[in-house]
Amino acid sequence: MDYVISQIEKILKNERERLNLEKQEYRKLKNMGTLVIRNSSERQFFCEKTGKKERGITRDKTKIMLLARKKYLKNIIRQRETACGILNAAVRSLYSARIREPEFPKTDLPLYLSRYTQAEVDWLRNSGSQNHLAPENLVYTAANGIKVRSKSEKIIADKLTEYGLPFKYEALLECGGIRSYPDFTVLRRDGGQVYWEHFGLMSDDRYAEKAFYKMAAYQKQGLSIHRELIMTFESDIQSPGLIGDIIEKSLL
Image (cartoon, rainbow, N blue to C red; front, side, top):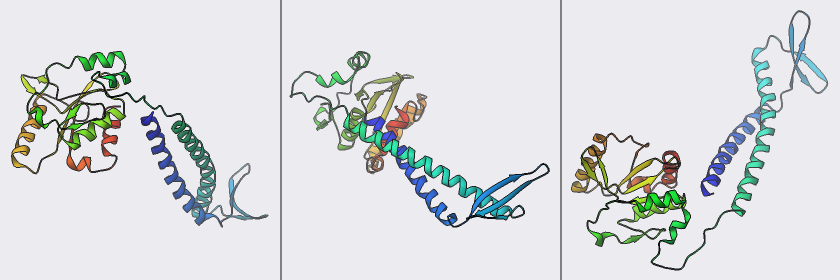
């Protein structure tokens, strides 16, 4: 539901911006007359009508185009205002009908799985081997209850949960004889898997060296950027809305 609302809001924002530009342009042409086109058996005549008077402008191509543009703008502004009203009403209706997930008390059972289909639950339970290195660094709890290693990973995990996308944290990936543990393995809507690596400490030389090695390994494995592999950095986390945009473009 949140995804649908966000998409309609983006369309509405774009339509309002275009509407404002069109209204600004129309105001500059407002005091001009109306384009009138008259046909005879031999030729076509163009006139500018102001009040009850008409003035021939057949030879004034610039004036003809400006009056045609004015007519177009008047029509499209009316249509776009109607569209914006419909979209705005749709957003309000969707917010009022927004699905609110039940709140469960704290429990050892993975009740967060209730948000997923049975096929998605089966995929999650078939996690295979996971990274057991330095479990003491798993200090941040994501919205779905799993432990992650950084605030940035928590932001990504929470966003994936918000969009209803099942994911595994640091699950084993074996490809081309290379073993790795991507930060997130995400199940796309179409059933495909996407691996998400977040490189958060690139200012540290040792970390950066390992990160570049990992990037090269993924490239060697033949993973396609955006289609099968997402890579983000701290600057991406600091950009409002960017993680959501990445999810919408690459995972939905």
